[in-house]
Image (cartoon, rainbow, N blue to C red; front, side, top):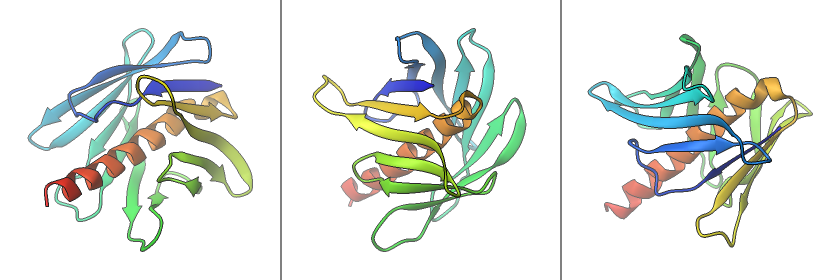
Length: 162
């Protein structure tokens, strides 16, 4: 299953569609702000909330709670690393391998490929493509990619403020 979304300057207040390989909307993402941290709500193609990334406040490293259908699945935690960004997922043994800086990487479960993530250049705005091997992993794969994107953007904002 293929998912696509266009990069924007990330805003917690954005709403954007995630489409499949033929351009049909599969999910929508809607940013919200609250006093207890930012939230990115994932909606199905009928507008029903099916997932949420919720920022864990007061953390040195970016952390996000992964909530699917109202149930906490675990967290995405950015690890401290000198050379390459690394992430830990508390909800399953997935790992990220590849070039996170160029946004070309794979999500793997041991030796099993879960999804391939790539950035298509030469569009008016960069388009990200997520090729998910098993459609049942589409929502969670999307949430991992969005969490990584938010963490990368957060780091870039911190650098630009100094």
